[in-house]
Length: 172
View 1 (cartoon, one colour):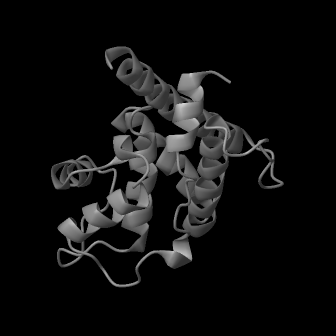
View 2 (cartoon, rainbow, N blue to C red):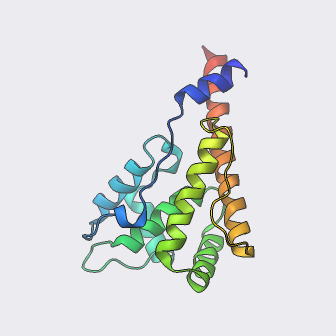
């Protein structure tokens, strides 16, 4: 393992996402939503969202409009998924994947699977786990697509961290 890779691994913290039942039960206002989503990705600033970005996702139909200006659990879960995957796919592709998910699995199950799979891929890509265990028993086209998307997201995050650290070492 090279110096840069060691530095990236030392700087990375294990990614742990809130499961559906752990998301706030009470509706959150927009500023609270962005703070919550961003705190979820404290160790991964590339995934942070702004209030403007969240409002844009609502306008584009990726996230339902808030009820009485409050966002619920499903909206928070969608925003966490979108924050993680938005650099890998465009808005239209994300919307399509969310629609496919709604037709094939209940929302809670799909979101919890997403969390577990992203954590495993991220922690494996950053060398925080020695292997990439298989999660779930179903073998479907939708599962393979999501698995590959999350593997790509984790690899992009690792590559970004690696390049940032290599540049920092080069400039110092």
